[in-house]
Image 1 (cartoon, helix red, strand yellow):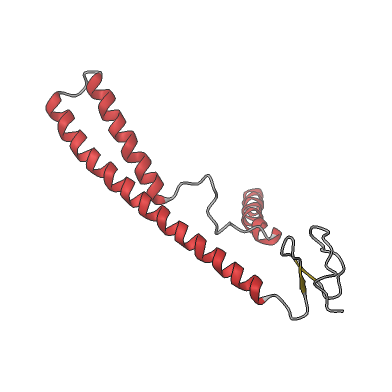
Image 2 (image 1 turned 180 degrees about the vertical axis):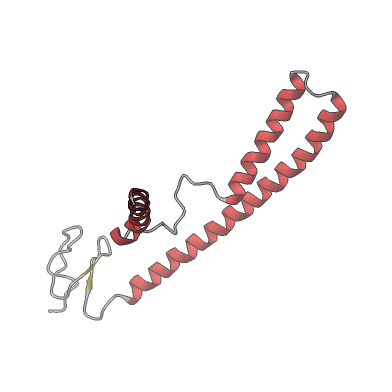
Length: 146
C-alpha cells in the first residue's frame, strides 16, 4: 500500500510539472533570437573551424602532406559553398526587411485621416484641432484651416 501511495505521489508530481507551463501561459517563442545561429551561419562556422583544425593538424605533424591536401581541398569547397549559402540567405533577409519597411510606410500613409494635421517640421500626424505638434511642439496654426 505504501508503494502504491508513493508511486501515485510521484506520478502526480510529474503531471503537475508537465502541465505547469501550460497553466501559467508560458509559450515557446517562434521568433529567432538575435544571438541564435541560423542553419547557414552554423554550416559556415563548422566548415571554417574544420578547415582551421586541418591546418593545425598538418602544422603539428598529425597529417602527412597528401592527406592534408586532400582534406584541405574538400573542406575548402565545403567552406566556400557554406559562405555562398550564408551570403544568399542574408541577402534574402535584407530584401524581406525592406519590403516590411515599405509596407509600414504605406500603412502610415493610409492611416492619415482626412482632417488630421501633419506637422510641417517632423511629419508627425496630430489630431484634428491641435495647435501644437504632439511630438516636437512646433506650431500647427499655419496647417489648420481657419
